[in-house]
Length: 274
Image (cartoon, rainbow, N blue to C red):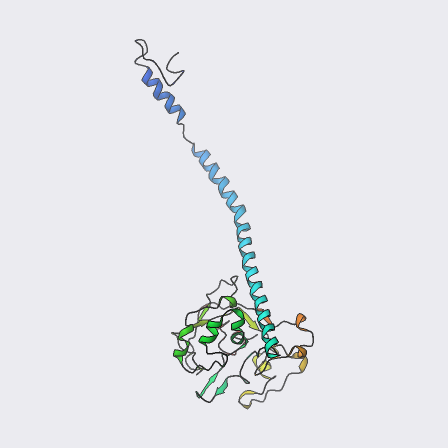
C-alpha cells in the first residue's frame, strides 16, 4: 500500500521521500473550500427566504398591534359603561358647560377636562387621575402638572400609530388655559377621541348653552352625538341604541410632539373631540 492510498504510511527506503508529500496532498484534498459561485447561490437562497418571510412577520406584528388597539377600544367602552352604571349617565364629553369655560377662582379659561379624564380610574390610571386632582380637576398653576409631566397613558395609545410618541408639548403661549402653554411641560396624547355633534366645533357647542353669549342655533335632536358639553348623555337618549352608536373612534396623534392632534387638553376638534 502506498502513501497515496492512505494518510498513515510506514516509511521505507523506497518511498521515504515521497510519503510526506503524499500526506500533504491528501490533507489538501480533504480541505477543499467553497467556490465563489456556491457562496453566491447560498446567499441568494437566504435572501429569497428572508424576502418571503419578512412580510409574514410584519403582518403578524401589525395583527398584534391591531389586537392591542381593539382591546383599548373595548376597555374604553367598558369604562364608559361602568361610569354610567355609577352616575346613571355617560361622562360629559367636556366637563365645562361652554367652550373655553371661565374659572373665577383662577381668572382663567379652562378646557382640558374631558371624558377621558373622568374615566381614568376605570382604565387603571388612578395615580394619573389623582395627580390631576380628580374628580374636580382644580389645577391652577403650571407646577401642578409636574406629577404627570412626561408620563404617557398606555391605555390611550394605539401602537399602530407610529407617527409620533405619546406626548405633546404646546408652543401656544397666548391662550391662557390653565396649566397649559408652557414648552417645558409634556402631556399625554391619545388615539381615542369622543364623537361630538355636527360637523364643526360650533355644531358641538350648539347642544349646550352658547359660550360667551355667541348666537349659535341649536342642533336638532337627531344630529346630536353621545358626547357634548356640561352634562353626560343618558342611555335612553341614544335613540339608535348604544350598540348601534359610535361613541369613541381612533385618530392619529399628529406628525410631531407639538402637533395638537390627540392632545386631550384643549376642547377643540382633533384634540378632545371629533
